[in-house]
Image 1 (cartoon, rainbow, N blue to C red):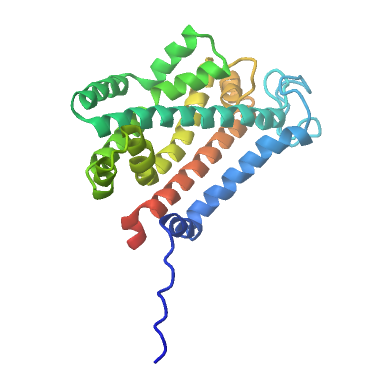
Image 2 (image 1 turned 30 degrees about the vertical axis):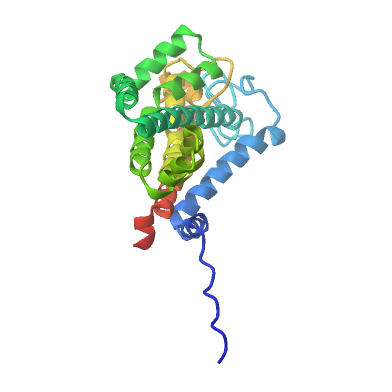
Length: 289
């Protein structure tokens, strides 16, 4: 009688999630769109070495001309050059502000959910305080007080947009802190820091990864809104600055607003599609379905 064959190795949850993500057409489309945006923003300045603030042609030159492929704005600045160089600033602010927001949210949510009691109540009151504040108005106040630069805009966005991540992290920690493997770590004398960051957090990551992805899109829209209102860095070209500076000339030079607006739309759409794909791939109930 031949010996029984060992069962085939099962895939890990992350590998299974990656396979589900790769089978999601919307997620793949979002990944391709985001990759194209990143490629243009990163490699574009090497191909088109120019100053986005340079006056290259007559003001309001229409697009698809020899002087400027995508036209010029009301000052005569090239819209295509502004899109390429402005993408770097917009994407950088979006990514760094999202990381800051997620870091603050995870730290507060993990602490509140793990310790509970008075610590939980105190931190949730702080979270509720930031939730009831108008986020855009609060960010405007912060930027106005400390002068509009890329750093202050990034910090302002990160400081006002962490509450959703904090509540999600707290809910995950409240659910996981009493499971068997966490009790086993306590029984062997593991420190609280080890349990929080080394045991519970890795098991709470799937929904937090989705939250972090979507936070990038929110941060990009925040940056565009602040720049539109004239609170962006005036010395750094960004898509929001392009829209804000040309909004008065929308009827006479629509291209100066439409093209950067389309770039923001495509980028946020790509990030949202990736976030939805990650949610489908990392959610065990949806994987079973």
